[in-house]
Image 1 (cartoon, rainbow, N blue to C red):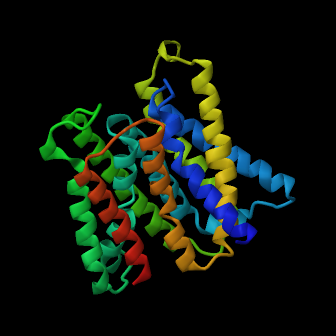
Image 2 (tube, rainbow, N blue to C red):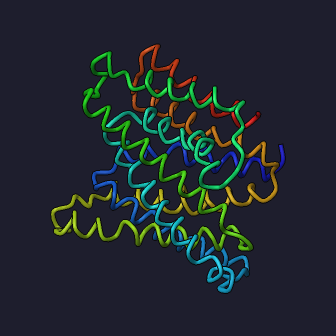
Length: 289
């Protein structure tokens, strides 16, 4: 296993632990999103400075519209996903978010004018069934999660998936720009996107619980799970085969499910695990067709 593959896998594992960290933050999720964007973009700028690389202003200007839109979708994706973590289990929220690639399959013919691969339609159907099984709506409440809250978390997770689809579509329109330049702009815009909501929803900063543990976790999320993870991710993105990237990408929800089960003791029924297997299996198989 070469170094770039190790870096890419490390980034995905780090992404998969975000939900676990969020459960120990006493601040609202939108504040975490705000500072993750600010700290992450600042870290990547510092990394570029240390490695003697320069931001290509011309490339950014040429892609300004799609960069801004993708940054907005990124901020919304994080906001809805982090809120989903607070309303349902980390496993369910992550699995809902990772229906995004399958939604792309359905929307690509309309939005990107790409032909629909009919072989992938059974995967979309399987993932849809998987979401129904994971929701457990007919089973009452899963352990520690009320049914109404669970369904709210699922809807938030699926909304975050729709925002992720927006990120994918916008990124297909962005050309002739380095991954790091793109990441800096997207992270900065994601922070600006969530800022108005933070100011409106948290008018009294003194009323917030700025405990040291939450501050340290936010710093960790910004530096490790965003700054370092993004650098590792983009390093692998430029050197690994597309098929490898697509399949390895599903390590993130797998890690989320494992963390949810082992560290937080968030359980799913056997039917729920069957649904999780359908979602992950459908996503991986769709990438191989």
